[in-house]
Length: 591
Image (cartoon, rainbow, N blue to C red; front, top):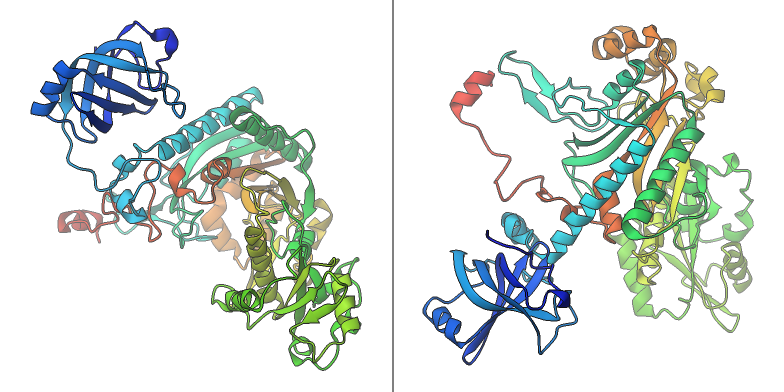
């Protein structure tokens, strides 16, 4: 046999045992007439000791990095132990070896901290996957997958597969389409999610379904997004929102205890979408730290029961504030000593195109009780003190203020809050703060298209108390969805809703989105028809599996938790895909 033990298995209790091992050469170290070789496989690293006699063979046929090697010998205790690896107390005194395959010099070092750049490592992904970092990430992914499946099995869920070749329904992100050879001029689409199929499974009576499934979206990429991704897709019948939240909060707690050894004894906090936007500027707030947004002037204040009249704070001779649609502020703890250089750097940061502001106003709340700002000529110290008090600033804090268009300024302040959290070390990746965000708007208005669109998807039910408003366009801005997101450390990791299950309400939803009855029947007639055959109340949720794994691994980028990911341009640089097809294939497909 090639091996009796793996490279991560042997310990002191194996001393004296005759073993055979196989793996890749990690490093070769020659010391005069003896040689040490680090042999690696996915389980770990073991040191091999080649005595003087075998060293002569190595001189004639030297080993190189990444050679595939088999070695036989006896386990002995190391004289110079290595506490950094689990096998560091022993080594193998080699009695015989065989080079199973040689290797050319790798284009980068296959070590924990490699010298290879992203594109180079993705081109040689099969080499990058040999690195311990990637191995740990994929091991974590496997463990999360196993833990999810085990929990859902105990809760009575069945894993049921749904099709990958489906009909294109251009709602939401762009579809990837697949031409059909047998139906010339027609196309399948790859699923953005199994949404309609899992609803049909509820109609069929399979009341607890799940799938760890590949989904596809042809959209612009970023660190936490890939054109093909994996989600844990779930659906349940005869449930209300509370049932869904309890079951999947349980899933989250089970996975964290199973994989990370962390327990969450308390129920997850819940926050409405309105509160998230008001206090944090986005619908996936990072609650590991405070720094809530102070709303000094905003057009939505009238809708808030906790909004106060702040005109006395800002109203004056400062035209930037007077002409702004909104004024938002945060109090940054312990930063009143920021230098002019640091403040100028913050100003340049908010001026970046990604943020889009013209500048930032600051108020230093000095430790001696005085106040200094970038707008001293327009504001008295008493007014600066009042603004600082409104923002709950303490002596030693720095108040940062942005003003301008409501939507752009709120988004910019959200980003500035997160940036300051990063700079102050308040976003510790080893600290986890989950929460539920609930009561999302059902609709949002697409100004470019001049119509209402579904914020979640068109199968989401309104809150029960708002169903009667469906069909009244004047109420669309006020209708709340029976929807919920799970948020972890400022990242949405799961989202779902209670679904519409009556044909009449579903038709009203399609009509609200500007879809004619004929169009609705053409695109979704199968679902509308199914609702006439006894559809049960149902709802579900889908978790971004790649994002969940990355966060459990203490990272924000999902790429290193996927075996063969795409780059930021959506390309597989290892396969050089996508690529053109030959003329024969095009002709067969009618292209």
